[in-house]
Length: 76
Image (cartoon, one colour):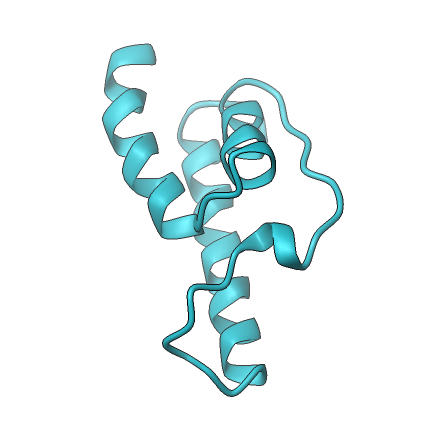
């Protein structure tokens, strides 16, 4: 993703994808987590942080975005 705001944009794209998955699964209010649907998460810079949050920590995209808002201002 190249770091910076692009890491945040990647999370927004994944959130849109997870919203579509929720509609296909017929439970739009469910907490769908990307690790339920993807085997690998990779990234560099902020993309690496996103990969850790979504893959290793198994966070929802909304939780990852909220944490990104908190740590993004301190780290970058």
